[in-house]
Length: 258
Image (cartoon, rainbow, N blue to C red; front, top):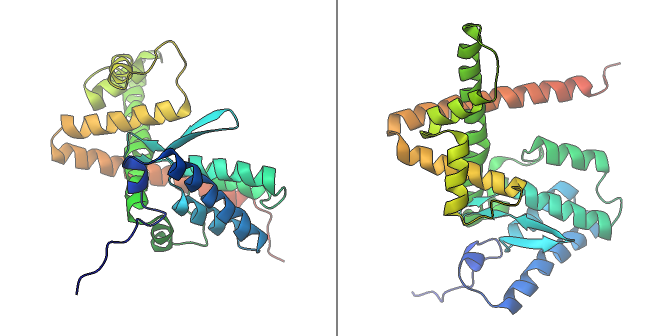
């Protein structure tokens, strides 16, 4: 039995990657925001309401209150925390006090899925297309930054073991090990490839896009065995960083015993 083709779900990125009319875009953005406000007004847990609104979002970027937000990098990597930050800002203005400021700061700073939600639930909220883009961001930006940190630490450790002074060139060397060229040269190539104006300062989204661009370069540059080894190294380093952050968070909480 044949089935009629259905419209894309609200969380399907195909709506924003394929050409769409200005009217469709105009109506898509408020729908996610209105849904969020309605959910909060009905008493829904705010973290779940935010994630649900993220699943309904369809704009790859926008200008909101004078700031440009780019959520989808190179059409592939989804910065979900940036969108969460923008939605929290909307709630703060529309429904003051709906999200406690201390809880919001922890949520945005930790950069992790809420404790009350597992990975499967998170994937269901986002939908398949957006979840794939989220994983691209996690591997291509979050893990890539952890790998860069590890590489720089290794270069600095070897450098200092020879009683040589610390200097900014160590970052250049670390990037040369990972990507075959110093960071300054790579940044210039990136700006040319993406046609970015080199006269203006890079935004956080620009830097994340640069990191994702480097991630793709590294995968194409080295053999699969080295890529896999570097990925494992980055995962270990990220786990160490998250463990330390969790330990600091637990130590800062008041002792509930007694």
